[in-house]
Structure formats: structure tokens, C-alpha cells
Length: 64
Image (cartoon, rainbow, N blue to C red; front, side, top):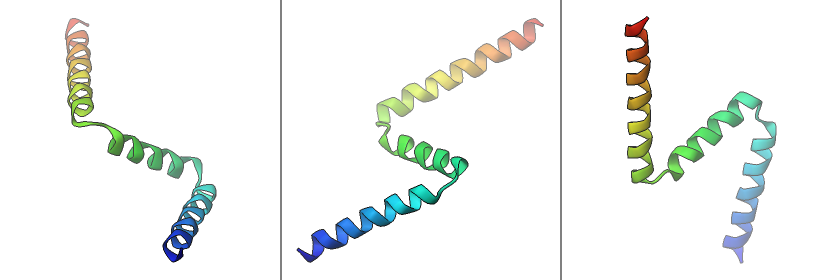
């Protein structure tokens, strides 16, 4: 029972601290959560997407 009470207290503290954050801090927390939730496969796909986007930007800059 004590473990459950500690866990509930921790959750309440986390929620209270989230309420006190400004928008920029909240965005950073969401970015962190998103990065933790990505699977290794998602990370590889995300990296490939970024590399492709960078290459397209470089190609477009060379053309102009």
C-alpha cells in the first residue's frame, strides 16, 4: 500500500510540475518523450528522411 501511495504522490508531483511549465519547457518535454518512444526502426527512418530532405535542399540550392 505504501508503494502505491508513493507512486500516486509522484504522479501528482509530476502533473503539478507540468502545470507550472511555460510553453517552451512543455515543448522540450514533449520532444523528449517523443524521442524516447521512437523505436530503433523509427529512428532509422527518421534519419533517412532528414538526410533526404537535406540532399534535396542542397540540390535546389545548386540549381539556383
